[in-house]
Amino acid sequence: MASWLSKLTLLTTITLTCPALAWQDANGGEPQDELEAVQLYSDEQLVDMFDDNTHLYQVETVDRCQLVMDIEAQAELEQRPTYQFLYGDMLAWGICYERDVELGLLYMQTAADQGLIQALEQLGRYYHEGTLVEQDVDRAILYLREAASLGYLPAQKRFANIMLNGEGSPYDFTHAYHWLHNAVTGDEEEHQQIQQQLEQLGQLMPASAVEKARQRSL
Image (cartoon, rainbow, N blue to C red):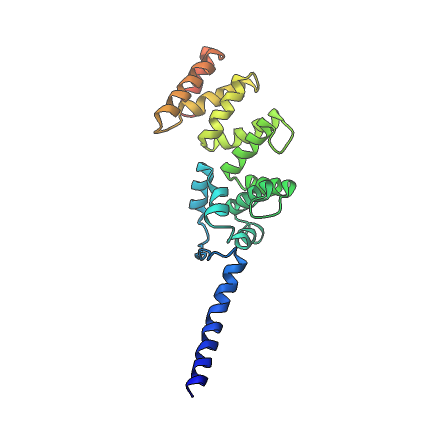
């Protein structure tokens, strides 16, 4: 009887231990941290991540690509612009998905068409710098003008820089000055940058145009 009980105890021990050992072997011999369930991001959370440029790091490094199916569904089926932009950016740079620049840009464009200012600004920046696309300053102006008119400061600053580089029309100069003159920021360094841009723009504009641009509304 004692011998039979000993064999049963040994068999039970092997049964309970082997799966754990096999799991360790499959992961290089070291136990891996268990993945914690990740909640779907809210639109507000995504906008904050876009503004801080942390969205790709969040989905890949922090959340370990756990939401790839949800992100695709929210972009493709629910057609939420924040998720369309996120999905497009992930595709364009090969984050958690096989890289597909063309499809990624298409989703970014779809988000921009729905008025997502971060998508408008990024496409404008890409065309301005020639990132993923052929450089096209005229096209960059179109995207950035739209985002700037909606109050997005990064777009307003880049739009002004393009004007300072000799691009754009008198109409664009007036609006570039107007948007920066009415911009609000709590960052002292950014405030100084805006003041410098305003001074430079003012030197290239007639006094009457500057006076008009300083009005509360155009």
